[in-house]
Length: 365
Ligand SMILES: [Fe+2]
Image 1 (cartoon, rainbow, N blue to C red):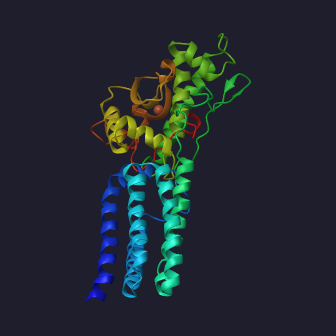
Image 2 (cartoon, protein in one colour):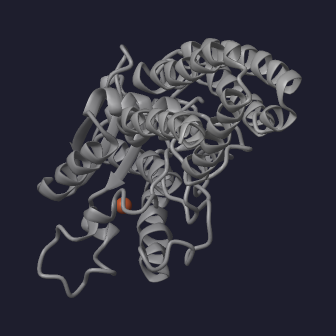
Image 3 (spheres, protein in one colour):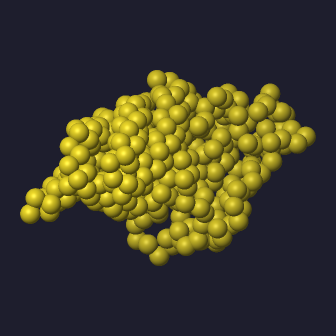
């Protein structure tokens, strides 16, 4: 009976620590951990509970064997390492501190190494039962170190030069901005026909109008952002529409992309959660009256907010840094929603499934 208890009590203790740790980790695993920059060697989330359960059983059996052979001197070290193991969960996940996590896991490495060496001298099997744990901890140390080194606080999201558009000029004529993917790449969310009209007809119309209207004005030959900032009327409308569309088409991608950890953190900080941001962004888009744009912007203090602008207006005029934009002009969706009785259907695709990413030229990561 004593023999059975010598094995079962440590195993159950380990599993209890594992269960409490995973309970403590849950909120961070949902909202904080996914926003971290992680090593490419990081296994899928499902791997961790499986590996830890196996390891906890092994290290429980290890101390059970030593208790059975009467080596009680090592029990204290075993309990201590389990306690530090628990503290690592608290430091890294509950307190969301990679540096605390790194310090704790380094201490744990030393304790586990000491235990393993000591266990080998009493009972080889007890020692071997700790080796996978030791190796896994070394791997976890690398993963924690990577997280610490790659998620240190940074400067704001503000772009180095938000006026640096991708629109080039030849002989004082603005070039048509390139579509960064084939016209059918966003199907089935946005059809090729919709892109052909939106990009090929409407945006081309703005570029052609701009090139026609600017001839003979003092703005001829000026960078397009300066035209936007210094004009009004038809010239402003067409120049701003070119800039807005250039960002808009660059905000979309046919590939699932991950938002940078820094932007994720800023979104969680200023909106509460990414889900809440999506909700507010979609609400802003679907309630915008008439033609316009919905933007995720960053102000000079680095705070994010959602703003809407009517017609061709752009937050660049308010010295806000645009990070994401959605076109809520009817021409953006009338092709795909031509049978819809409401004009609010299309904007809901804004952040649907990750089709919108963040415009590369506006963010520095
Ligand atoms: Fe548009």
